[in-house]
Image (tube, rainbow, N blue to C red; front, side, top):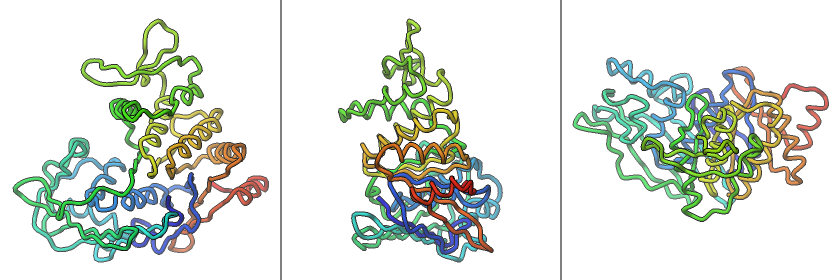
Amino acid sequence: MFTSLYVNNFRCFEEFSIESLDRVNLIAGTNNVGKTALLEAMFLLIGAENVTLVVRISAFRGITEFKGDPASVRELLWRPLFLRFDSEATIEISGALSSGGRQSVELRLVPGASARLDVGDESALEIGLGTSQLFGQAMQLRYTDPSGDTHSIQMLVDEKGPPRVEPVPLPPPFPGMFLAARRRTTPQEDAERFGRLDVVEESYDLLEALRILEPRLKRLTTIFSAGVPMIYGDIGLGRMLPLPLMGDGLGRLTSLLLAIANAPRGVVLVDEIENGLHHSILSKVWRAIDDAARRFDAQVFATTHNFECIWAAHQAFEASGRYDFRLHRLERVAERIRAVTYDQETLAAAMKADLEVR
């Protein structure tokens, strides 16, 4: 679990830090203050040696097409990662770990071969990179693991085929999940994650958690329909019903809890966590998130601009008897962004005084 975070030269952040992280962290702040960018920084950090994640975060923003001349592609794909578009700078992201040591990544553009950029996995189909061209650029990532060893990885582009990552990167030290606001988790992804719980004989009771939103649920199962796996639920209609047909709220909660369950001792990132959830059940949702995070020893980072969401989280963790929750409000001061962190006492005082914490 990360106990602190440092970000420099990434997106809108210059020498930004959060010194006190907890198991569940909620990021608030006004529009265009860096909430989503902070999750993206965490995503790159937990990805360790996976340099191709710099492409995937553009897809999270809804930028799914890279076409045109090489200069235009370069301008859209690489430069927005850097503070003030200064692509000659070095992006630095690091975090202290509760187990000891630090984990860090550095990103910089270096001279490289001309290339056709294609992530090389299923994401390429979603983000339309099959014909993208980048000339004279390669993205270099330097990863420092908790033991202090440094690994240098480059994503090289090549006209003859998909990009090469050299050397072959090692897998990340722990699992990570990113639930983007603009891209919904597909029913197939949820079904696959649900199936993994059965494979490892995990005792987590997803059915009981989902009854927060749908008390009529009697059982859950995975069914292949038209060749596609999907989670079905029994709500007493005489036949099973696909979960996606039971409303956005149930689908959102299912995706949230399955992401946590599939990231044991890892990190889950959720953009605009309240999407699809009615304010009246947010406290129960936070209790379910708290229970899942503790059960799977996962750390959660989520964003919101909703006061009811913050209030519900505070109430849920206060009632739990173990307040492992922090609110971090991002605010712009002059040309820099800083984080104001609220623990249980300061958040309760701020809300009592009707101070703005969103």
